[in-house]
Image (cartoon, rainbow, N blue to C red; front, side, top):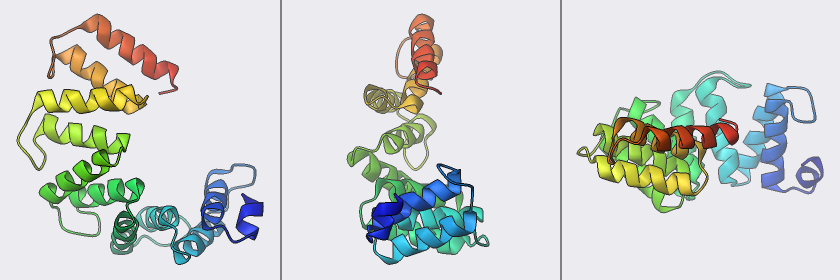
Length: 189
């Protein structure tokens, strides 16, 4: 990533920041990670905007500024970054840098799912399962978890197992639930 960053690749710069944040091939340097994410965001990279938003939300290499995090997630979402959309969803759902708006969160979960994001599918499934921003629909929740699981999402597999275990949108099948939990464990979850 260092070579890509040296060549001015905004994605390489963002990924190098991730390395500094998570001690991948280098020692942890959260300030350096923050600076690299800022540079990637300044170059218009949606991943950089999302990563920088995460820094502001959680105080990584900078002080916490939830409003700034919200704004950066919005910028990334405007570029159709599913990561940005998913983080923006959480902001609306939990009131991070903005007021709580469950309906807006639901709409964003739908957008992310439509773009193929397994996180979006799982989150939209949670909305249907628990009536967040929409009416409860256990069958739709099950279908979304199944779609995410079919795309090898460990969270989708776990959620699908939970549905089989508890009869959410499908008949109880504890053996199937066990098999799904085992598959998720095999994937490292």
